[in-house]
Amino acid sequence: MNAASDAPVRIGLAGLGTVGSGLVAILQRNAEWIARRLGRRLVLTKVLVRSLGKPRAVSLGQGVVLTDDPGALVGDPDIDIVVELMGGIDAAFDLIHQALCAGKHVVTANKALLAARGPELFALAARKGLGLYYEASCAGAIPIVATLKESLAGNRIKSIIGILNGTANYILSSMSDKGLPFAEALRKAQERGYAEADPTLDIEGLDAAHKLILLIRLAYGQNLPLARLFVEGITRVTPDDIRFADEFGYVIKLIGQVHDADGKLVAGVCPMLVHKDYLLASVRGAFNAVRVEGDASGPIILHGKGAGDLPTGSAVLADIMALSRACMVPNNTGFLTEPLPEATLLDPMDAVCPHYIHFTVKDQPGVMAAISKSMGVHGVSIRQAVQKGEPEDGYVPIVFLTHEAAERAIQGVLDDAADMPFIKPGTVHFRVL
Ligand code: NAP
Ligand code: HSE
Image 1 (tube, rainbow, N blue to C red):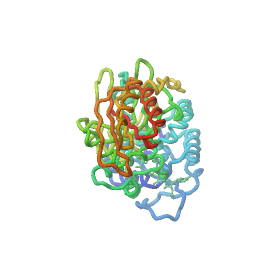
Image 2 (cartoon, helix red, strand yellow; image 1 turned 120 degrees about the vertical axis):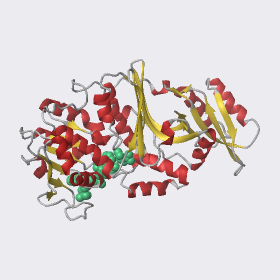
Image 3 (cartoon, protein in one colour; image 1 turned 30 degrees about the vertical axis):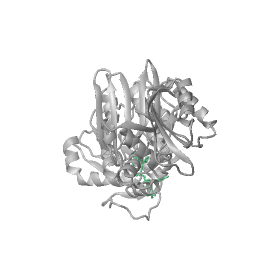
Image 4 (cartoon, helix red, strand yellow; image 1 turned 180 degrees about the vertical axis):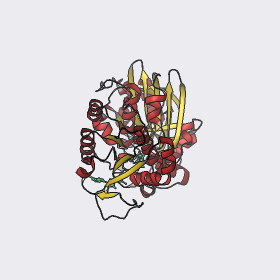
């Protein structure tokens, strides 16, 4: 980057889809304001896309070169910061790798890439003394990366609990508040630009898992490979379970969480029943929220738009501005050692919380007694149990809320249930926050 503290900072942008267009719109709209804060201008010089002829949501303005050649971006000596907003793994990895090798700072929103191959890229950035910033990769507009890396840097983080995927939250809110079917709610989330190019990442919990892996790295200085993280999506959440949960006083949310249990991390992503009294229960639509508890700070909740063009563009721009400040010293992961060690996890079977179990059973005597006996054998204590509705084809739903129980004990009950001839296969089990 030009050492003169008032020289313009030249930006090469890779990707002009939802987030890329949002970033360009803010750069244009707030150009004077940004220059006033930085004391220098941010100038977009080149934009990389896949299809040159595609109509765009923003016009780039005079002098900005549109290209479909990644080499033209990373090989351009006049570009100071490469902003990667393409998504995907391989092409994005190559682009960022080449940009860092060419001595350019990088900003990305690509959580899938940083979860899978972050350690290599952070190690390279550290060797080169360059910035690899990624505020937009976690929870859209919410400044959770800076919060963990800087604001709470002196705290030992006790726990992080988050609604980290806007699409999943939009779908669950639309199903419960408006009675929309799952597929229609997903289609609307895609139309609004919240979903990933491959929306299975959103609905299968993987996008939230990628974000949780980044938050664990920032909070605990440990790398957690995706294969070691418990991940369950929202595709098994039905209108019936949303209704039963509501009657018990809960809403269902896709939650990503980690807590420190005496030096071992307990982490996972799954749909959970959240009591309506909790702040997280009132997070609606594509909004996200993250509750972080530091040993000194106590609990902090950040809430805001978790996806979309301008909210995500806002977070990308914050990183560009941080890297554009004169005398900037890069702080990528918040830790000086690279690579960071692999995470120490508690066996997920030892994780403890209350549980929700929905059996579909034959409406006959002895069923409730058999299930209750199995719970007793496995040491699972029942908090509430209800039989709902009229029999359909001779079957009725029986729904249990338990007191706190270990995952291993609940799996024992579910295994017993699978052998009971009067219980239909497909018992539904969710955890309770
Ligand atoms: P998008 O709308 O699909 O846009 C992707 C852009 O990248 C398009 O302009 C595409 O070009 C270009 N592109 C893709 N592959 C390319 C390649 N190999 N070479 C050159 N250009 C390529 O995606 P998005 O929603 O903006 O998301 C971008 C990134 O931000 C992803 O990593 C995503 O996970 C992350 N993110 C998204 C959101 C959100 O709300 N959407 C929020 C936070 C983070 P064409 O237009 O020519 O096809
Ligand atoms: N697809 C992501 C979501 C985009 O819905 O949360 C924001 O990371």
